[in-house]
Image (cartoon, rainbow, N blue to C red; front, side, top):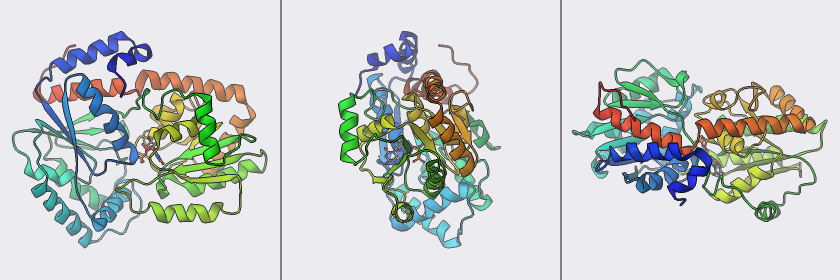
Length: 403
Ligand code: UDP
């Protein structure tokens, strides 16, 4: 893990001084994060990097994971899709399964933190055991148009928290509790994002049988319908009619996502007759993801719905030209035609990819602008500062906190 001092060349001394100052005010407080998986997906990605850094600043942060069986995670995946506004068949039994597993976690999981920081809907009901400690619910999902039944069910729990945190202004709702807007971030010094020697990049390409004889278009994502991998293949096919290129669809599963294997099969079926489509089921290997992103000519994120879209942040930080759907937190990261290209359809994605492959200087400029935008807004140091201000705000209901 990088030392906090190593961030100074990237973000400046003043940013690190602010972090130390704020951390001093939180001394002695235990922050307990709770989510539903320690591997896969954006939440685990962030916590894995943030907890050690908070530790270096002297803040005792810990991380617990709730337990749940297959049925529970099938239900929470349905809730996830329904919250994203996807038409989903939710039944009465689903709510019962959710409550039953929640009851077991309430019994089995000790909520010892001075601040209990609960991520996403899966562990939301733990708040039923709240004592005098502070509770935060951190929503990573785009809930701008949620299924009403699921949202109302969850609301009964959410209103028992001290505060709720959302990633983008469009996700907020009228709530009886305090709300904060905090966007996620990436760690520029992690294996996923640090600079890599060319030999490392080449060896990863070799391992996966990708040659650099044609431009590489890549989408890295869990195999999830909301990430629209089949839509990416359709867009690639349109591009391929004009420009000989290859497509990399790389993804792994998250332990709390039961749909992954089925979607992977659909993608493999669709891709099987084209040797220029590489469908990679990657183990959780950050350095390999990094290498593939760096080896790509264009990075795509054609999600139908998205929370924030860390894959976009990662690609922009590597100064890559990105084509991404204008959903969830993606427009916070991409200003169209300035730091990437936004799309709204398969045709739009194909048009944008062709434009970037045909104009390397334009593609390079978008990538450079994207990198600066990420440096200024979406690195982990900004995120840690926002979280510390949030923690302090819980103890200072009315005060303004001065640095
Ligand atoms: N990721 C990964 N391996 C994969 C697929 C995804 O390491 O095979 C990472 C990806 O690099 C990113 C995170 O998982 O850091 C996904 O976060 P994002 O916000 O893009 O989507 P989520 O999966 O949370 O919906």
